[in-house]
Length: 430
Image (cartoon, rainbow, N blue to C red):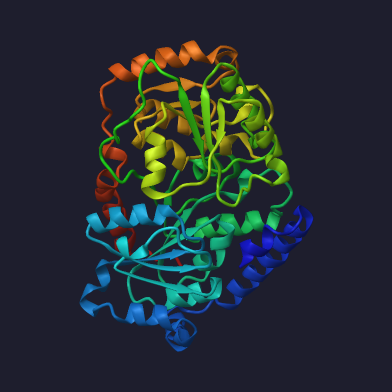
């Protein structure tokens, strides 16, 4: 509910809303500074507010509780499904309880049990009601996980998709940063999808939980999917995922590629409509160039089929390409951030065109992609011969070992991590 309201407001109103919402979270957390056994009793008493979830959790046999981990998701994402697969391989049985939004996957394929509840407070009651030893919270950012971490009744592992401190715009007030910092500090463990929180620790003195593990969005397969592109024909590049405005656009990159007779296939997020004002420049480019193709959003196997028809995947951050100063996000956040699309390109056996300045993604591309092409200003001056050489290199390259970054490779590490958190006798009271 918070996000659906927030993103419909102007920036100033959004900032004010975060001040009010953050203040409310801090006040509620202060009121809930009661012993864990009392929280457990309140959770049982409040079960009428989440009947489906209560029935699901009550069906777990007492002797099996130690093997269950409760996945709490404020905004469902495919990351939960990948970590659920790894957890099950490691001997843990994940349960999904989520709030808001429609799932873009069938939860029964990944979770033996799942339920939906109404919002943040009900998710908190569910964590109190849960009789198992571990709760894994998935949140859009650290601030939105504040209450779940500060008012916990048991051990909590935190996983955040983004960091509030990354944004230079004034839509994130100090109280929002405070909530994020406190949520991370209060958690018993953290699964990191990238290096951003480590940068927060280094640059801003964030206190990390006692247990931490880096788990980039793991691949669901251990070997690359076969690529269907043909050497010697046209060159096809694909860009998928969210496309921002201002410095987050990739318009100059696309223009340079299309000018050099390289096909670019653009797949944006479903909520980014072609008739949106900020997308007008891409509509105009589609009319100007036969090499630019703005495609409709696709999912599942159709998405993988489209990827396999291209030669390269594109991920770009143009300020790093053209030597400009970022104004929307801090440089450390961009350098340390992860990307699901990079992992998709790796899985689809694509070469990856990427700026070296996006350091963590550049490292992943060089280590696991068939070939990584540095996206620089010099490259954009004459990209075709560079990509043709990269295609020849790609044709001769040996398959990379993707096991370490697959759910199969992650499973043992994640299982040990869960066991370490639950075995830690020093439960962090907050």
